[in-house]
Image (cartoon, rainbow, N blue to C red; front, side, top):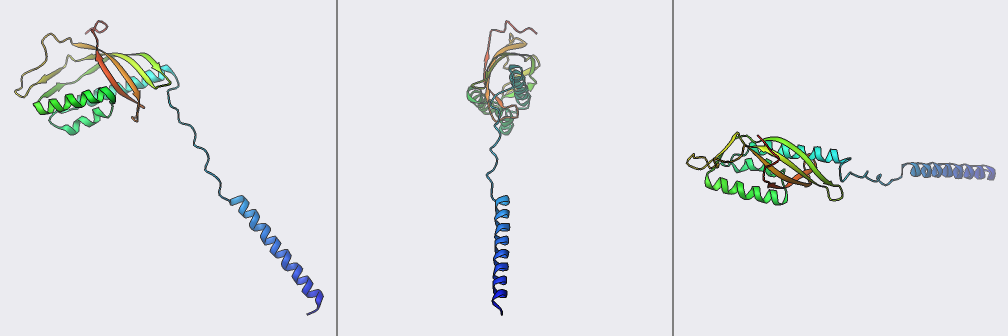
Length: 188
């Protein structure tokens, strides 16, 4: 083989290898692993005080709906109501539900939210305070003998101060406390 042919062949091989290497490098640069995009920040609060109050009301109404479905004879029925609570409210409900189950208490009727008013919203701590009037006129609590345990002078509507905190619920809130007030703000 003449020297010119070997030289030409070597030159072509180098060119082919360089072209292949350049192609591989270009392919590697365009398909190289790239870091996953940074996750978009998730909001820790609500867009406005109005949104926070609406979420608190939705939370409380969902809790009351679940509370209306509690059957003290069936402890599994407690869970949906407890899922809407945290802290003091959760501890109080667990204690009350357990005692009612042990004592054979029966609940009849349904609670109704007569009114709900947002009072304050702490965006930094995702805490909301509200007041509500809970209509209890259509409810009764019976002992194990079937006798009503409701005081005859119980008001038909009860005023409550409520607190909510951020939580892993569909509304992003849970009821953390409920305290009865004098009831002056509620009327039947």
